[in-house]
Length: 326
Image 1 (tube, rainbow, N blue to C red):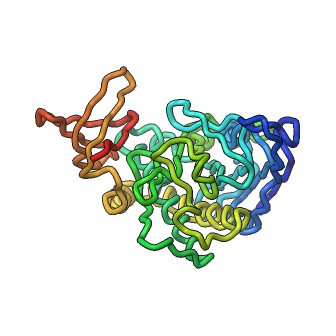
Image 2: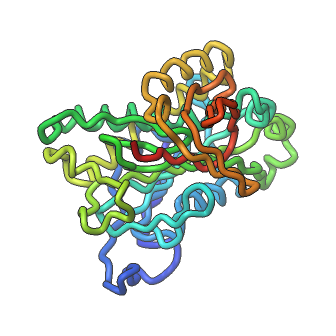
């Protein structure tokens, strides 16, 4: 059973000033297709962060109230027309105006042993990226949008960016969250089962209709600049989110049921969809170090191998990877 909640704001006011001090007019997204496939959906006109709200729902025990479908874990969706404090990886700020962007978080649970296994958990991020690419393609096909002239390929930049025609279209942030329990469920026979799970939140931000003069960087882009025949933002957002619920839930379920086989399938897709491989990159490591070289391979554990100018290879599991100009 899908439950829905629609509200004007997680916090007041209903129409806050945006970054330029201009009043906004955000509205709660209408998402009937997503409501039909998600187990719970909350939509907001304005929210501090869809990821924060999704984390809060998991910590409150929201998954306990939902029943698995076909053996797959339930999926909760949180969507907003405007975020006040959206962030990507490394704390980067994500700001949008009403109708500009896709700002949606997907929350579910995975076995703790899988989610914390360094040989497997990198593929959760990759699964989210592939699901986003597939959902975008499905939605573009639904509305019959075609590119303006030449092809505008959708690709993945390791580890978490969506690229369109060589420019950043969006990003993905995956977070692990402790699952909460409440009421009688905390003492039930299922409590031990909940201890074996960990919450996963996948936040997705995509530029849908951001004007060219308001793109945050020269490397950024927006979907409408490449696909002029787009559906209006509301139906387009709903189509993308609905397709991603289905794709992500199935992919994560297969990762739980047959990890090796699913990792191999995801590996093949990532190699096919990669914008990073074969390009010169700069890797900014967590300790402040920098590696520059050619991105050679996405490895079996979803890490990235980079060869520097001296011919030495480096395996990168975490870090900020930028593609350098030719």
